[in-house]
Image (cartoon, rainbow, N blue to C red; front, side, top):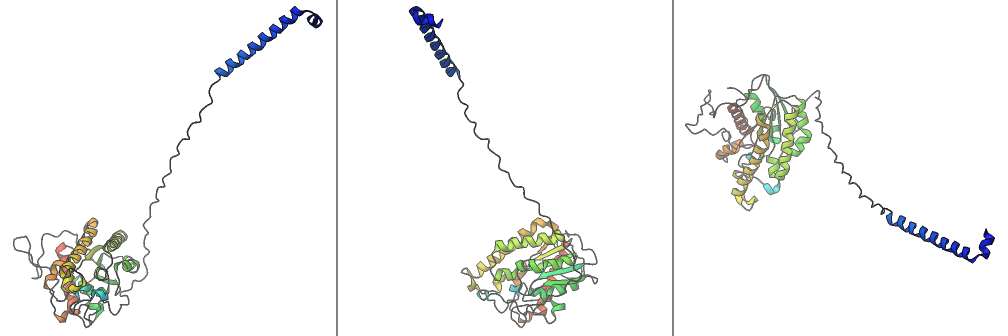
Length: 339
């Protein structure tokens, strides 16, 4: 066959044409396949991954471990003077949280016609009905504070500091403990006094920690946060009724030259501190009774008999007035009955 193709021109032409046709058909088929091929797949955008949000772990409230014994009286610092830039007048007992007159801090008699009635012993009037549950007996009383709670300036601090005077007004079976140090501010009291108070398993706690903070210019927001922490711990770790004292009018005993605005600015500063103290205590409801000393400040005088020899702390007489005033407001609130 191949020999015939070699010598037959017609056959060779036919074979050439057939080859060309076959090549053309193959080329057209390839073009069709390429034209119908699907476009390359477009890669999908990555699926965003949700950012994991860490859920904070709840903080457990530590249960305090009672100690075997609770000190009845910490070693007091001999003096507790204000800073040099807040030097006090000779009647500076009130600046340390005390008063200059045994009657200064007694509740102001209410106006007639407001529903008030005099006490059964002829003492201060009680305004309105009691609103707190009376303390169960025996009362376990712990006092938290600074040098005025220690009793610096009294003849016998163990028995004549204002908390000791208050304890003496309470029922005879009251157990009284002091967790106090001279010169301390509230932030330091959180570290050393609160644990002592909790360990005593109290049913009554008094707190007077403000005068050192304001005279040493602790920032008010810092003080407020520390006070809230203190109240949170005391109400959360004990079942005690808290009695919280605020500040008297320090403008009556501090030099007006301490601030540009003089006595008016000092008075406004103290009032602002007292507002913050009351606002911080308010969320705790009946667990915290605020004893407001500011309205009782109008009778502060320069009577030297209520100031101790150091010219700063209250004397025995001054402490007696403070203790009686606190008891009167506790009585008005219904925490205690008639003496």
